[in-house]
Image 1 (spheres, one colour):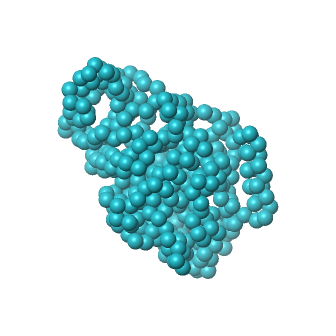
Image 2: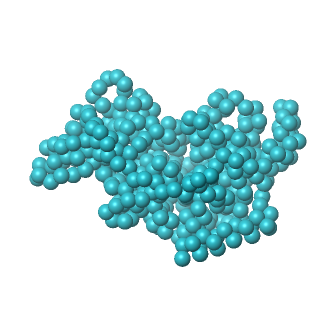
Image 3: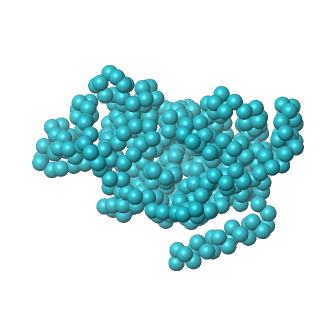
Amino acid sequence: MSGTEVIDSISNIKISEAQREVEQTPSEPISPPQPSGNYDVDESVRASFPVHGTKIVHAQNYGMSLWGKTAKVIVELPSGEEKNYFLKVVMLGATGKHMCEGEFESLKAIHAVSPGFVPEPYAWGKYTQEEPETYFLLAEFRDVSKQPASPVKLAAGLANLHKESVSPTGKFGFHLATCHAKIAQAIDTWEDSWCALYTRHLGHVMNLAKPILQWPEFDVVCKLTLEKVVPRLLLPLQSEGRVLKPCLIHGDCWDVGGNTALDQRTGDAFVFDVCSFYGHNEYDTGNWRAPRHRLSNKTYIREYKSRFPVSPPEDDWDARNILYSLTFNIGNTIYIPGSSQRQVVYDDMTTLCKMFCADDLKRDLKSIGSMDSENEQATAGMDADEEEEGEDVEEEEEEEEEEE
């Protein structure tokens, strides 16, 4: 396929056949966003500029958003100096409110730790117009030179955020529900246990998907993943004397269409479209497993791991990476038009269940009369063998040669 290349998983557990069939990694560059047309700025935004007496010179549509509109607003300050602002507008009623407030609070939290790593947020609020019910986010404008950010610079910025951030309660969670796309994440609580918070978070996303997919086998693997796989993989992170630091995370770190870029002025990496909470730092790399993302290039995870070592038990990292990919791919399944992730998510959960609760999986699928209990094809994506691990090493060596 023109403009694409196939890259396997960043972990040693191979991606499923379903994922191989529907995903390739784009290799063509992403064009930086460009301003176009005129944008009418609501009075509520005009009243929200941080400097009193600011006057709007011009506003244009800028970039794209799946759930709203974005604009570049050029203003004149009382001093006569011109300044640019970024405006995001969401017309989804109460959902839009949660999205704008959650992103504002996420940007504020990250900016307090790593000021250059995100645009500075200034305000969020409601449009004066009654219909449709519309909310906005006003932030610093950053010119994009390249997307995604380079592996070295993105890894350095993300690892620094994870290392330097400190949970205000010492626990996992956040003070309000931030939104991954249109999903209000169930992280608006504080938990001593990462396993407890992630179970709540993943379970909420699964519950949103079940009535939409109406797929009994999906319900079975969801139940087993929550009850068997999650505790098996996450409880050891905080047992036998191990301590897991609650890190402030981006929450949706990917590349296609946005979320990470290089700043045109500074050349540094920065991120945006954040939906943060305090969690396990490895969660931010869960979305890098998907070959459809440029961040699936192994250089990104290698650079990140060199700056933030894998959490013990290290042997569980590959399986944890699949587990952390689930919330992103389930969200894609239920909210992205034309999504091809339905079978991918099922296969990934089946892989985990076969690794950690195979007898339960066979029994529960059989109890609903599913052919999948006997059909190995439907449970593709098992552990890579020695030959596949060798292939991974060869791919990494080839990538290193290309970088040189």
